[in-house]
Amino acid sequence: MPRLAAASLVGTAIEFYDFFVYGTAAALVLGPLFFPTFSPVAGTLAAFGTFGVGFVARPLGSVLFGHLGDRRGRRPVLVASLLLTGASTVAVGCVPTYGAIGVAAPVLLLVLRFLQGLGLGGEWGGAVLLTAEHAPPGRRALWSSFPQVGPALGFVLANGVILALSASLSDAQFAQWGWRVPFWAAGVLALAGLWLRSSLTESPRFLEIDDHARVPLVEVVRHHGRLVLLTAGALAVGYAVFYAVTTWSLAYATERLGVSRTVMLTCVMAAVVVKGALTPLMALLGDRYGRRCLCLVGCTACALWMLPMVALLATGEPLLMFLGILGALVAFITMFAVVAAYLPELYEARLRCTGAAVGYNLGGVLGGALTPIVATELAAHGGRVPWGVGVYLTGIALLSLVCFALLPETRPVPAAAVEPVAG
Image (tube, rainbow, N blue to C red; front, top):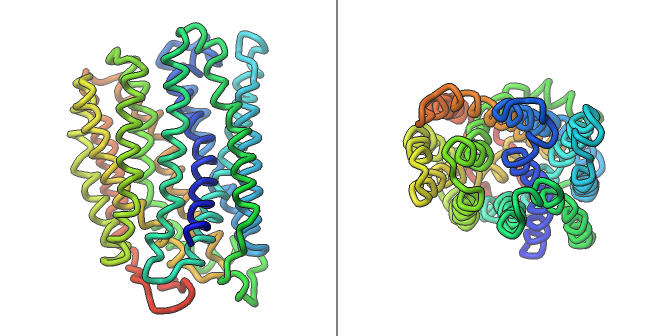
């Protein structure tokens, strides 16, 4: 289990590094380079628009790779998704800017961002299922939480590289070529991830399945459509909160408040490190008290914290901004530490890779794709304190709270395999 969990964690970290490095670049530099004819706010909105395309692609990736995972096994998904995400990320770093090739530049950016999202849509399902289906029932949430640490590591790695470049290069150098370096580094990381995953064995639960679904998506929609929609709605708040504090807040603080890029990246990274460290602890609580219980607590905390969070961000004081972001991420991880165990337990094994991944990634479309765009627009038309952003995030949290309340609990049962508890 430690070796399997480590391989899942590292691979997930690499793929989320690819995804996050784009989000940070969109907040800091892509607008002027690829949309120079727009105003600063409009350029940022356009850059966030290409960012959102990745979220739209993720459910399609979960369908594509979910089909592969339910028909051919979880292990092939991990290799194929990592290759696709890594190659498209390296290619982003090679795209000429608008000044060199005109409108073709943002079009290429859009296509490559779509391919990034397609790969990441398959990554989550394969990684968490391979871990969950190997794990003992009483510690399933704990072991499944390690792939959930991957996004924190990927974010810290992506932003750490950008922070180092931002601190060592002038603004002109960073805009000219420095922003490309983190994308090129994705190629080396992808090769390392493929080497780590080459030794993984297939899920024992998958090997026990005799009647593989012919078209998993059709069966999921027909028999579990309500469950997919409820999980998507429930997880929307996690995506909205995470990308509000890790993507939108960067643009808001640097453009509206005049906070330096280095200071803001440091605040966000420090909060993400704490979030990553707390993930296994929250997962242990999920093994003891149940998945749904932790999700309800975290969702309620999000609803209560969003208005204080934007007030703290608006101060422009590094310590207060850090506390605002930290509170939001602690509430977020209270939910997301257990979803890697929770979602697979809701589906039968023969449909699990498709069902869990589609619900998870549809939540990303609802909560992650539009949040940076909506938040940027609301902040642009508000005062110094962007109360509209806080109200928007609180509304999503309340919607997700209702969805969580309608989902069943999935306490671990004394069985060798993950079995469904709801249809």
